[in-house]
Every structure is written in structure tokens, then in C-alpha cells.
Image (cartoon, rainbow, N blue to C red; front, side, top):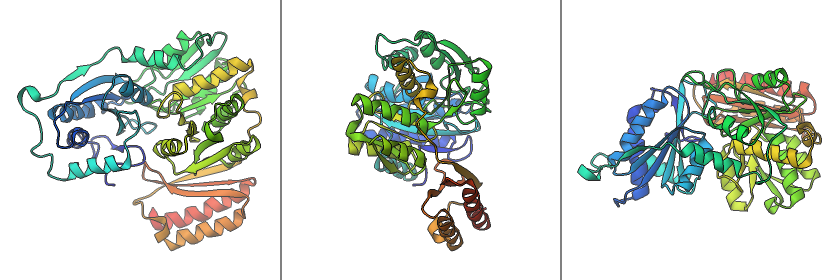
Length: 449
């Protein structure tokens, strides 16, 4: 597809496709795709993170939506998973999130949820693209009293707070826990401290003063050094770091060890297995899931299903297989018993719930998980040429596989959101990983950089 990647549309703000004109057409195309040829009034929720460019895109999207006779409900800065919840709670027809997630502030993106709170299917995204690039919308739009309205909704923060808190047993609170929250100067800056404080935790919130340009800047889950140092500084029982739009989370235990998405999956899946709530005895991961998690799950009698990177692929597999947990090493964890997409706040609450019920510190919950040593190299590329078409790169990959000799994994893939090629190696011997990555990196740079 021309516009949609693994997680919506993304790019540099005010450079195509992240421009007002495209956002306006996207708003029109979405409503038209929902209506077909009919003119039934639709309700569209629009949320955003804290980037400066969100104002520009929000206005353009709203114009497109209301021009087609739909009503736009603007909820302001809210975590992406909150929009997925609100779409269902408010019985809306779709939800739009303006966010580039973990990317730098000068990027932005647009992702869309269906009325069921799920990311749009590839077929619907393709239809929307067809409408944008055709002339079908040129003469479409309402006139007079049929033009839609835009409303600013003020109570959505409270709705999401109640929703998140209700994922814990009613009799449970977080009293006695000192928690450091890194809100990444992003969409969780207001709602996350309120949730954890209302549940009784002693909360120290950092990076909670967004100014439009400091989102993800040396903070949040994409810069874990900050939550690690803050957790130690404040002698926290738990550290929690979200990304810019709040769908990812990393944690830190009381020994100041970082807990990534794979480790969180090991904690949650083991607890669900023991309680009999793990659906079809399966966890959904991706091609990037560390082999250490696969070994851990095998040891407790649980199967790992791997899919391509992207929460949309994870959710699709979960729905197809009747599974209720999946996620990525990046901290994007989907717990479908609670929400329809990755939710950093709810994931953290699920881990804290296990801690409180067991009466043990976080370090004890992940002590049996052993991560296989891994290393990733990111290479900026000029163009994402299919790798199978470049012989030198294929030869380098085959040579590297022989070095690992079946005692590890090798993953070479393009980023779905940035002009990068990612090379990841896993093996018990780090020297083998370094040799493999170096071999492939040289071939990539000669052909793609």
C-alpha cells in the first residue's frame, strides 16, 4: 500500500504524507468507506498525543470528517488504547489517533480503530487509499444543515481512569508500593499518575510536562536508562515507563533490572496458566520474540505462535486462534480480556496485581526467565528494496546462518515505520552474533545505504 504501514500512516510532520491536505482527504475517505454510497450520520472520535503537529493534523482530519456529514468528537491528548476503549464505550463508528508512538517529536502518524476498537483491516485501509487517490471524493460532501459538527469532550479522561482501575479486583489496591512513572512527556502524562495514585500507590511521576517537542526525548520506554536511574534514585519498588502514546510499557524491579515485553509476557502467561485463564494454552509473539521466551513457555507447557511484527498481526492471530494474550519485546502487550489493543497502563496493572496477590517483589516473578543473548543493528536505507532481490545480502544471511549453526536465531527485516533495516541475532555465544551482524551489515550498506 502507498500510505498505510504496519501501524497506520507515519512520516515527518508537514512533509507528505503527514500534511493537512492528506489528513483532510483521509477524514473524508474514512467516512465514505464507513458509509459506502449511503449518507447515514457517523460518529468519529479523534484523539492525539502531545506533539506540536497534532494541532495541524487534528484540524484537517476534523474538517474532512465533518464535511462528509459525520460528527467529530475531539478528546485531546489520550493514550492510544484509551481511544480503542472509548470507541466501544461511546458506540462510535471509528476512532482516529494522531500519534507517531515512540518516534521523535517531529514525526507524526495517524492510526484508525474500527467501531469494535480494532485496527482497520488491510482491506479497509486499501479501500481508503483507493478513495484518496481517485476522484471519487472530489464531488462528495454535505451542504447546509447536513454538514457534521465537532464536539470537544471533557469527561473521557475519567471514563478511561475508571475502565483501567476496574481491571484490578475491586478489593485490591496498590498501597505500600512506591512506583516511579516515566510518562515520556506523552499521552499518559496526566492519566497515568492519576490512576496509580487513586489506587493507593506512592507515585513519583517524571517526564510529565509535555511542551510539544519533548515527547520521547531521552525518556519513556524507548530510552530505558531514564527509568532505570530514576527507580534507583527514588528507591522504588517498581519503575514503569510508557512510550509517547501509551501502548507500550517497560518495567523495572526493586533490584533495578529492566523488564522488557518478553519478560512481561513470561510473568503474565505463567500466572494465567496457573489460574486456568490462558486461552488455548498459547501466547502470540512475533518473529522478534526472544528465543528465551519460547524456551520458558515450553518449560511450563505453553505454546508460542509467531507472527510478523506489528500489533495488528498479533491481534489478528489472537482472534483467529481464540487466544487472549500476545505481545512484542518492545512492550506492546495485548490482553484481550481487557482491551482490544496494546495498553501500557493496563499491562502494568496486571503485573502489579500478580505481585500483590503473591505478596512477593517483582524480581521474584521473572526469576525463571532466561533471555537468550541478542543484539540488534539498525541501518538507515534509501529504499526498501525486497531483500530476496539482492544476492549479496542473501549470501551474507546464509553465511551467518551457518555460523549460528541452528543454535540461535537470525532476523533481518525492514522497520514498518522508519527507513531502517533491522538485523537481530540471538545465540548463546555473543562473538557469533557480532560476526553475523557484521557480515550482513557490510552487505546491506554496500547495497542499500
